[in-house]
Length: 397
Image (tube, rainbow, N blue to C red; front, side, top):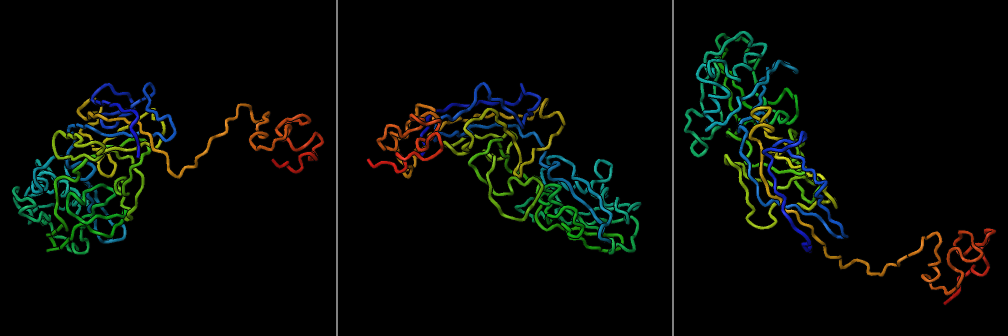
């Protein structure tokens, strides 16, 4: 059990007054003039998040979840093309497909080929071809949501010119974990091995020499992050499973380790707010005895920062947060199994001490260090280096 010795609040606002090494979502706090110190034996530092607020200043579909690859399945290292769903906030999956990925009935978005059509026609066997139609089989309207539809993406693409060996070309959609969370966004199978040409994230059906059908495996969604994570730079007592520090890697192993995560906050409103409903909900015990610089960063679930809408957004724009972090110095109770003893206080430098005479209770006046006849000795040996007869066997008390 720990006893609170000292407590105070740290008030933060990263909207302005930032040094060159800080940004609105990743701030370096120099504490040199006001260091957090736990001085005594058994004392520790605890940081607790009491309040947090941040504008949600990123798109739900962004560089962390919008990348996809199209590949021909005709050789070990076939031609491929990588593109991305247009970043944005989409009301429904249908809106995302028609306005950000597949386009309208002719595969266009704002008069230009959609990201999917552009990637498809980049493949070597389809280069120079055209797309005359993109037909959504599911979902088919903007009002279809998960409560009334599976939201498993299913669509056909019709080519302008027949391709005799289209079944051999067999274009496939690939969604790599290394490229982000597009497998969650689009409802496809994740591919954990970077660059692996074999697996497909959607099934591809060659309907005819001019038509392909692509079908997902799971329901698509318009966002892949429901929480933001507040992380600090100090080693602490908190632990997490390996997924929460994985960035764009899937090790396919379940592991637990220490983490720098301080808090996990719901990310479902335009203004993200958190107020602790009770003491010590989100806290961590710092392993160091002193903190002279504290780094605080806002990330997604796997440790990535949220992509910026503009390169200057985190310094000159609206990417910032406010927070109240409670600092506590705690004293741990001594262990009931600790050895109880009275330490010997040595007031003389050990090299010139005669203290062992008293400490060992031999009762011999010249038994200590540097007694008469000794030269920086240990009380047992004379100048000639021979064991002194008088002390060959320590006298009994």
